[in-house]
Length: 247
Image (tube, rainbow, N blue to C red; front, side):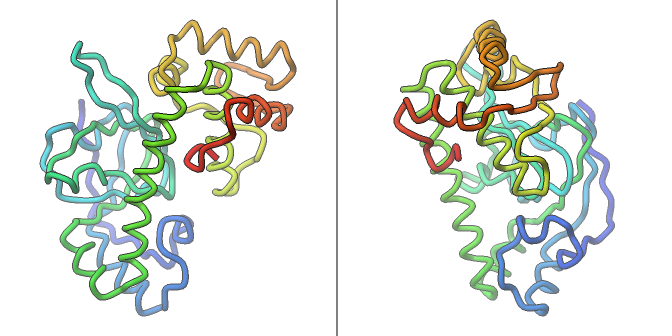
């Protein structure tokens, strides 16, 4: 796949629309200036392009400015298994910290842009700005909690519960970024959703159809309108409630 274009344009964190989501809150103006120095470049990533591959040397973390990404790992059979979907304001690349090599592949689901933060700069600045250090620790902890949530979902939830939890999580994250709390456009395919949820494509399509028949959602290709969010929540509660990572 074609690698992304590289731009040497500096990005001022203080002026970025994703700053309140991407960076720790309560930073002073001087600390924000220091964070600007942490960002080396800005990179545009075309749809279907790879940001990094499994086994590739880990050098940087990536803050997503625009666009939507998926992370996946290859199974023993050589098939890709989706392990996450990331959107603007979120950090990607944390998987490489453990052994200095990426353990998964990150691919853009639409044209996007990321801020490249060399990890050695992140470490240096974290020692000076304690709020940033805590923020990085929170990001790493969030990944652990997310993995536990996905394991819980795959191990104990039925198909409709998994899809309901997925839709609630997605619309919640989008709403935090100023989007509608009831409408969304799926950047991923139903097959990719199935890969993430541990469901077959036919099961995902059948479950969507059931939600439509029950007037819980309206579906027009990739456009989803959640008509009854409480019904979705009720479906998930039946399995023991929403895990924090799925809320």
